[in-house]
Image (cartoon, rainbow, N blue to C red; front, side, top):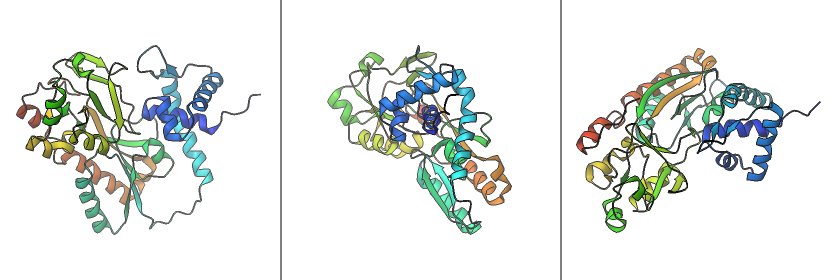
Length: 317
Protein backbone atom coordinates (compact mmCIF):
# COMPACT_ATOMS: atom_id res chain seq x y z
CA UNK A 1 0.00 0.00 0.00
CA UNK A 2 1.36 3.41 -0.93
CA UNK A 3 2.17 5.90 1.82
CA UNK A 4 -0.28 8.79 2.25
CA UNK A 5 0.35 11.93 0.25
CA UNK A 6 2.23 14.41 2.41
CA UNK A 7 0.50 17.49 3.81
CA UNK A 8 2.79 19.71 1.72
CA UNK A 9 1.28 18.34 -1.49
CA UNK A 10 -2.27 19.26 -0.50
CA UNK A 11 -1.02 22.64 0.70
CA UNK A 12 0.48 23.13 -2.76
CA UNK A 13 -2.84 22.33 -4.46
CA UNK A 14 -4.73 24.84 -2.28
CA UNK A 15 -2.10 27.55 -2.73
CA UNK A 16 -2.06 27.00 -6.50
CA UNK A 17 -5.85 27.42 -6.59
CA UNK A 18 -5.56 30.71 -4.70
CA UNK A 19 -2.56 32.20 -6.52
CA UNK A 20 -2.97 30.71 -9.98
CA UNK A 21 0.47 29.21 -10.66
CA UNK A 22 2.57 26.44 -9.15
CA UNK A 23 5.61 28.73 -9.07
CA UNK A 24 3.66 31.41 -7.18
CA UNK A 25 2.28 28.80 -4.78
CA UNK A 26 5.78 27.41 -4.19
CA UNK A 27 7.06 30.90 -3.39
CA UNK A 28 4.22 31.46 -0.92
CA UNK A 29 4.91 28.14 0.81
CA UNK A 30 8.69 28.57 0.78
CA UNK A 31 9.22 25.50 -1.39
CA UNK A 32 11.98 25.23 -4.01
CA UNK A 33 10.33 24.94 -7.42
CA UNK A 34 11.85 21.49 -8.18
CA UNK A 35 10.37 20.13 -4.94
CA UNK A 36 7.01 21.71 -5.73
CA UNK A 37 7.07 20.07 -9.17
CA UNK A 38 7.80 16.68 -7.56
CA UNK A 39 4.96 17.13 -5.07
CA UNK A 40 2.58 18.05 -7.89
CA UNK A 41 3.63 15.00 -9.91
CA UNK A 42 3.05 12.84 -6.82
CA UNK A 43 -0.42 14.30 -6.37
CA UNK A 44 -1.33 13.50 -9.96
CA UNK A 45 0.17 10.01 -9.65
CA UNK A 46 -1.67 9.17 -6.42
CA UNK A 47 -5.01 10.66 -7.47
CA UNK A 48 -4.73 9.17 -10.94
CA UNK A 49 -5.93 12.32 -12.69
CA UNK A 50 -4.43 15.41 -14.28
CA UNK A 51 -4.76 18.33 -11.87
CA UNK A 52 -3.35 21.06 -14.13
CA UNK A 53 -4.48 21.84 -17.67
CA UNK A 54 -1.26 22.67 -19.49
CA UNK A 55 -2.91 22.98 -22.91
CA UNK A 56 -3.97 26.57 -22.18
CA UNK A 57 -1.90 29.60 -21.29
CA UNK A 58 -1.76 30.41 -18.51
CA UNK A 59 -2.20 26.84 -17.23
CA UNK A 60 -5.12 26.38 -14.85
CA UNK A 61 -6.58 23.77 -12.53
CA UNK A 62 -8.62 21.02 -14.14
CA UNK A 63 -12.21 20.25 -13.18
CA UNK A 64 -10.92 17.19 -11.28
CA UNK A 65 -8.62 19.43 -9.22
CA UNK A 66 -11.45 21.86 -8.49
CA UNK A 67 -13.67 18.97 -7.34
CA UNK A 68 -11.00 17.88 -4.87
CA UNK A 69 -10.33 21.40 -3.59
CA UNK A 70 -13.12 21.66 -0.96
CA UNK A 71 -12.10 18.31 0.58
CA UNK A 72 -8.45 19.37 0.55
CA UNK A 73 -9.32 22.63 2.32
CA UNK A 74 -11.33 20.85 4.99
CA UNK A 75 -8.63 18.18 5.41
CA UNK A 76 -5.92 20.80 5.96
CA UNK A 77 -8.11 22.80 8.34
CA UNK A 78 -8.84 19.67 10.38
CA UNK A 79 -5.16 18.77 10.44
CA UNK A 80 -4.21 22.21 11.79
CA UNK A 81 -6.96 22.15 14.40
CA UNK A 82 -5.70 18.79 15.66
CA UNK A 83 -2.24 20.29 16.11
CA UNK A 84 -3.41 23.54 17.69
CA UNK A 85 -3.95 24.23 21.38
CA UNK A 86 -7.72 24.13 22.00
CA UNK A 87 -7.77 26.94 24.54
CA UNK A 88 -9.35 29.91 22.83
CA UNK A 89 -10.76 32.47 25.21
CA UNK A 90 -14.09 34.11 24.43
CA UNK A 91 -12.30 37.42 24.99
CA UNK A 92 -9.57 36.84 22.41
CA UNK A 93 -9.31 39.40 19.61
CA UNK A 94 -11.39 38.83 16.50
CA UNK A 95 -9.24 38.48 13.39
CA UNK A 96 -10.12 39.89 9.98
CA UNK A 97 -8.24 38.97 6.80
CA UNK A 98 -8.15 41.76 4.24
CA UNK A 99 -6.16 42.35 1.03
CA UNK A 100 -3.94 45.41 0.74
CA UNK A 101 -5.94 46.71 -2.23
CA UNK A 102 -9.10 47.11 -0.15
CA UNK A 103 -8.69 50.85 0.63
CA UNK A 104 -7.79 50.23 4.30
CA UNK A 105 -8.71 53.64 5.76
CA UNK A 106 -12.50 53.27 5.37
CA UNK A 107 -12.28 49.67 6.57
CA UNK A 108 -10.27 50.71 9.62
CA UNK A 109 -12.87 53.37 10.40
CA UNK A 110 -15.63 50.76 10.39
CA UNK A 111 -13.58 48.35 12.49
CA UNK A 112 -12.67 51.03 15.05
CA UNK A 113 -16.34 51.90 15.46
CA UNK A 114 -17.19 48.22 15.79
CA UNK A 115 -14.55 47.77 18.52
CA UNK A 116 -15.98 50.69 20.48
CA UNK A 117 -19.58 49.54 20.08
CA UNK A 118 -18.99 45.88 20.95
CA UNK A 119 -16.11 46.13 23.41
CA UNK A 120 -13.84 43.79 21.42
CA UNK A 121 -10.40 44.00 19.87
CA UNK A 122 -10.02 43.34 16.12
CA UNK A 123 -6.67 42.32 14.63
CA UNK A 124 -6.04 42.63 10.89
CA UNK A 125 -4.35 39.85 8.95
CA UNK A 126 -2.90 40.21 5.48
CA UNK A 127 -4.76 38.22 2.83
CA UNK A 128 -4.70 34.76 4.45
CA UNK A 129 -7.09 33.11 1.96
CA UNK A 130 -9.85 30.53 2.33
CA UNK A 131 -7.58 28.23 4.29
CA UNK A 132 -7.14 30.99 6.87
CA UNK A 133 -10.86 30.86 7.65
CA UNK A 134 -11.07 27.07 7.64
CA UNK A 135 -8.07 26.72 9.94
CA UNK A 136 -9.47 29.26 12.42
CA UNK A 137 -6.66 31.75 11.82
CA UNK A 138 -9.21 34.37 10.73
CA UNK A 139 -12.81 34.89 11.85
CA UNK A 140 -13.99 36.99 8.91
CA UNK A 141 -12.34 37.56 5.53
CA UNK A 142 -12.63 40.14 2.77
CA UNK A 143 -12.00 38.32 -0.53
CA UNK A 144 -11.48 39.53 -4.07
CA UNK A 145 -12.83 36.24 -5.46
CA UNK A 146 -15.69 33.79 -5.00
CA UNK A 147 -14.63 30.99 -2.60
CA UNK A 148 -15.19 27.38 -3.74
CA UNK A 149 -18.66 25.96 -3.32
CA UNK A 150 -19.13 23.43 -0.53
CA UNK A 151 -16.18 24.95 1.34
CA UNK A 152 -18.16 25.34 4.56
CA UNK A 153 -18.13 29.13 4.28
CA UNK A 154 -20.95 31.63 4.45
CA UNK A 155 -20.04 34.11 1.72
CA UNK A 156 -21.83 37.27 0.59
CA UNK A 157 -20.94 39.07 -2.64
CA UNK A 158 -21.03 42.68 -1.48
CA UNK A 159 -19.72 44.53 -4.52
CA UNK A 160 -17.88 44.32 -7.84
CA UNK A 161 -14.72 46.26 -8.61
CA UNK A 162 -13.73 47.69 -11.98
CA UNK A 163 -10.47 49.18 -13.15
CA UNK A 164 -8.70 50.45 -16.26
CA UNK A 165 -5.12 50.93 -17.41
CA UNK A 166 -3.43 54.07 -16.08
CA UNK A 167 -0.07 55.84 -16.03
CA UNK A 168 1.40 59.19 -15.06
CA UNK A 169 1.63 61.93 -17.72
CA UNK A 170 5.39 62.06 -17.06
CA UNK A 171 5.76 58.35 -17.88
CA UNK A 172 3.78 58.72 -21.11
CA UNK A 173 5.79 61.78 -22.11
CA UNK A 174 9.04 59.89 -21.59
CA UNK A 175 8.11 56.50 -23.07
CA UNK A 176 5.18 57.32 -25.34
CA UNK A 177 1.49 56.48 -25.11
CA UNK A 178 0.56 53.03 -26.43
CA UNK A 179 -2.29 53.20 -28.94
CA UNK A 180 -2.65 49.45 -29.49
CA UNK A 181 -2.22 46.23 -27.54
CA UNK A 182 0.85 45.51 -29.66
CA UNK A 183 2.43 48.80 -28.57
CA UNK A 184 1.67 47.92 -24.93
CA UNK A 185 4.25 45.13 -25.28
CA UNK A 186 6.96 47.81 -25.28
CA UNK A 187 5.98 49.01 -21.80
CA UNK A 188 6.36 47.70 -18.26
CA UNK A 189 3.01 46.41 -16.96
CA UNK A 190 2.37 46.76 -13.24
CA UNK A 191 0.09 43.97 -11.95
CA UNK A 192 -1.20 43.25 -8.49
CA UNK A 193 -0.04 40.01 -6.92
CA UNK A 194 -2.46 38.55 -4.39
CA UNK A 195 -2.68 35.31 -2.47
CA UNK A 196 -6.45 35.45 -2.62
CA UNK A 197 -7.40 35.37 -6.25
CA UNK A 198 -6.36 33.19 -9.16
CA UNK A 199 -6.31 35.93 -11.78
CA UNK A 200 -6.51 35.06 -15.41
CA UNK A 201 -3.73 37.11 -16.94
CA UNK A 202 -5.95 38.75 -19.49
CA UNK A 203 -7.17 42.11 -20.71
CA UNK A 204 -10.69 42.60 -22.06
CA UNK A 205 -12.23 45.03 -24.52
CA UNK A 206 -15.88 44.17 -25.01
CA UNK A 207 -15.83 40.63 -26.41
CA UNK A 208 -12.14 40.88 -27.39
CA UNK A 209 -9.48 39.39 -25.13
CA UNK A 210 -5.71 39.59 -24.93
CA UNK A 211 -3.63 37.15 -22.85
CA UNK A 212 -0.75 38.82 -21.05
CA UNK A 213 1.79 36.19 -21.97
CA UNK A 214 5.58 36.29 -22.32
CA UNK A 215 5.35 38.97 -25.02
CA UNK A 216 4.57 41.47 -22.26
CA UNK A 217 6.96 42.86 -19.64
CA UNK A 218 5.05 42.19 -16.42
CA UNK A 219 5.82 43.03 -12.81
CA UNK A 220 3.58 41.25 -10.27
CA UNK A 221 3.84 42.91 -6.87
CA UNK A 222 1.65 43.99 -3.99
CA UNK A 223 -0.94 46.71 -4.49
CA UNK A 224 1.16 49.16 -2.45
CA UNK A 225 4.27 48.52 -4.55
CA UNK A 226 2.30 48.74 -7.82
CA UNK A 227 0.85 52.07 -6.72
CA UNK A 228 4.28 53.38 -5.69
CA UNK A 229 5.85 52.32 -9.00
CA UNK A 230 2.94 53.83 -10.92
CA UNK A 231 3.32 57.21 -9.20
CA UNK A 232 7.10 57.04 -9.65
CA UNK A 233 6.60 56.71 -13.40
CA UNK A 234 7.92 53.16 -13.68
CA UNK A 235 5.15 51.60 -15.75
CA UNK A 236 1.48 51.25 -16.65
CA UNK A 237 -0.81 49.85 -13.94
CA UNK A 238 -3.62 47.64 -15.15
CA UNK A 239 -5.62 46.60 -12.07
CA UNK A 240 -5.41 49.15 -9.28
CA UNK A 241 -8.93 49.83 -8.07
CA UNK A 242 -10.54 53.18 -8.78
CA UNK A 243 -11.34 53.57 -5.09
CA UNK A 244 -7.63 53.33 -4.33
CA UNK A 245 -6.65 55.83 -7.04
CA UNK A 246 -9.56 58.32 -7.07
CA UNK A 247 -7.54 61.22 -5.59
CA UNK A 248 -4.82 60.81 -8.21
CA UNK A 249 -7.42 60.50 -10.98
CA UNK A 250 -9.18 63.67 -9.79
CA UNK A 251 -5.93 65.65 -9.73
CA UNK A 252 -4.66 64.33 -13.06
CA UNK A 253 -1.65 62.71 -11.39
CA UNK A 254 -2.56 59.57 -13.32
CA UNK A 255 -4.51 59.29 -16.58
CA UNK A 256 -6.17 56.43 -18.48
CA UNK A 257 -4.26 54.44 -21.08
CA UNK A 258 -5.70 52.38 -23.95
CA UNK A 259 -9.37 53.33 -23.41
CA UNK A 260 -11.68 50.34 -23.62
CA UNK A 261 -9.16 47.79 -22.33
CA UNK A 262 -9.41 46.62 -18.71
CA UNK A 263 -8.92 43.65 -16.41
CA UNK A 264 -11.83 41.33 -15.70
CA UNK A 265 -14.00 42.87 -12.95
CA UNK A 266 -13.66 41.03 -9.67
CA UNK A 267 -16.08 40.51 -6.79
CA UNK A 268 -15.78 41.71 -3.23
CA UNK A 269 -16.92 38.86 -0.99
CA UNK A 270 -17.24 38.86 2.81
CA UNK A 271 -16.95 35.35 4.22
CA UNK A 272 -16.83 33.44 7.48
CA UNK A 273 -17.29 29.86 8.64
CA UNK A 274 -20.99 28.99 8.80
CA UNK A 275 -20.56 27.62 12.30
CA UNK A 276 -19.12 30.94 13.52
CA UNK A 277 -22.35 32.77 12.66
CA UNK A 278 -23.77 31.35 15.90
CA UNK A 279 -21.48 33.87 17.62
CA UNK A 280 -23.49 37.13 17.48
CA UNK A 281 -20.35 39.28 17.53
CA UNK A 282 -18.84 37.49 14.54
CA UNK A 283 -22.18 37.68 12.71
CA UNK A 284 -22.39 41.43 13.43
CA UNK A 285 -18.79 41.94 12.26
CA UNK A 286 -19.50 40.10 9.01
CA UNK A 287 -22.57 42.27 8.44
CA UNK A 288 -20.63 45.48 9.21
CA UNK A 289 -17.90 44.61 6.69
CA UNK A 290 -20.51 43.67 4.07
CA UNK A 291 -22.20 47.04 4.53
CA UNK A 292 -18.81 48.77 4.34
CA UNK A 293 -17.98 47.07 1.02
CA UNK A 294 -21.37 47.97 -0.43
CA UNK A 295 -21.16 51.65 0.42
CA UNK A 296 -17.45 52.48 0.56
CA UNK A 297 -16.55 55.74 -1.13
CA UNK A 298 -15.01 55.11 -4.51
CA UNK A 299 -16.16 51.52 -4.92
CA UNK A 300 -19.48 52.50 -6.45
CA UNK A 301 -18.05 55.46 -8.38
CA UNK A 302 -16.52 53.51 -11.24
CA UNK A 303 -19.29 54.60 -13.66
CA UNK A 304 -18.60 58.22 -12.69
CA UNK A 305 -14.92 57.85 -13.54
CA UNK A 306 -15.59 56.04 -16.80
CA UNK A 307 -17.94 58.84 -17.88
CA UNK A 308 -15.72 61.66 -16.61
CA UNK A 309 -12.72 60.29 -18.44
CA UNK A 310 -14.75 59.44 -21.57
CA UNK A 311 -13.96 55.72 -21.41
CA UNK A 312 -16.09 53.01 -23.04
CA UNK A 313 -18.19 51.23 -20.42
CA UNK A 314 -17.03 47.67 -19.66
CA UNK A 315 -19.37 44.71 -19.84
CA UNK A 316 -20.83 44.44 -16.34
CA UNK A 317 -20.72 41.19 -14.38
